[in-house]
Length: 503
View 1 (cartoon, helix red, strand yellow):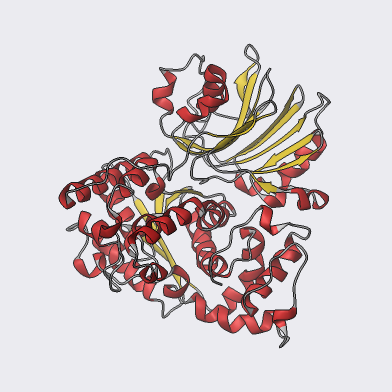
View 2 (cartoon, rainbow, N blue to C red; view 1 turned 60 degrees about the vertical axis):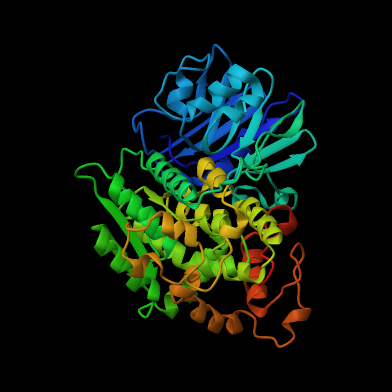
């Protein structure tokens, strides 16, 4: 695997020379995404830049990838899990073991529609004789932003890459789409398209869920470096950890990482899960001062002012810093709640049809909420995060489970069919532990509530507002908006960020 990296592209639609100085400056700002190598080169009217985090094929795979005979080159961010199969199917002379080479091979062999052949998490820009092709994976696991300004097009993995004068023009490149100058945006995949026939037998459903998730985790354990798991002690990360322990090769060490305040319930649960599974466990215990000191850095790195996202990003950033000292790859539990109705607010939706629509809406919105947090806090420390619950096969399997079987029920009974699918993999006290939001179970939420008054001391906070930002729904949100404005002034939030229904 190439590894999760940072990419930048500059293109001139009028055939002029791309601004390599601008591209290099943009790449400098996201160098944290790839400390293992840097590549930049112009190909006709397109300049491509790449900051590399190497995971597999460590000596090879430097980008841009491509060849002079075809005139096709690519900079990519992410992993293509089926690249081995594509090597035998595509008309392309592969010269590296990098999975990212499958990106340029697919586009060369089949045009932009070849993006649909790729299985994985990715964002890329390819340069070729017919002009550039940009694409992003179906769920939006990997980020991509762009600026369309007359004849000038800019692409980058993070918003902070763009110059201040370009920030008002920055938009999020949509998940599941490809783009070319001639055809514009085209959707090639939709993770909430009509599902296959629903399961009619619960045992069959449980078996299918278990097999799909085990396969999803196994795919994401491929690496030539040691790997780990973010372990909150909740159901999702504990199941991922349990599968990793069962799939580990002889002698392979699986690291687990947890963070929280001294009284954190998450820390205690994670410690118990790790001990049961025999993981190489690491903890970071922090206090209120650490949270307060980290907050401006967290908001700037997260590139969001969404309160629930910021609360969970603080412990995530701190645990990512811990993990980066030991591994280059971690698996996480993102996506499970949107597939199996794990959040508390889903209990209010007793109509199965309404719940089904809400789950699909939340799944398609993950790319600029939980997945944005997951990407930014890990890449801030040059750490690759992999999300097995968002394997397309896991998504398709979960959506075959009748919505009536996914109704949350009482606390501790949410995601019952997922828990049942892994009966015996963990002790019942861990398998059926009542869910807590990461920011709450880690002990961070209380600290941040106290800090909100310091961020926004005025009484009439609701009358305040910032250009480019929506009206704040709470004192806390206004405080985060101010921090984000300080870091990325000029941003038009509605063009790049999502927002949860409640603050």
